[in-house]
Image 1 (cartoon, helix red, strand yellow):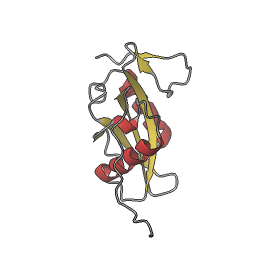
Image 2 (image 1 turned 30 degrees about the horizontal axis):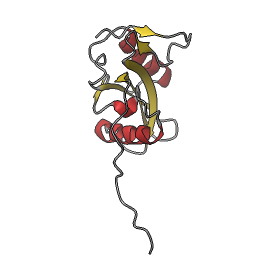
Image 3 (image 1 turned 180 degrees about the vertical axis):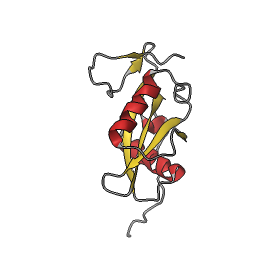
Length: 139
């Protein structure tokens, strides 16, 4: 599937759907309290996305895995530009809506570590959120 984006927006980072209308791009930022471990941080980011994103899909909430694009921590603006190059240059690492998201380490805005997470995601309802813990109700 070619990811050729279709959009009326002049914003190069705005979400764009493919010509078939079956997938959309996303570029998200995730600030973390952890030591920058991608597996943990990606799980946290997806968990948050499933609580707050549009349930119709086309977002980070639809992703299951991520691949780290660079080991080097780069600044936020450069990471967004690199993400857009991967997305709109039809890079096979992030082209599959059902494949991994891309992740680029950046300095955290509020914490030590952060990530720019991006990719193509299917435009369909994302998996139902499973709560991490049950909070007992007082009787």
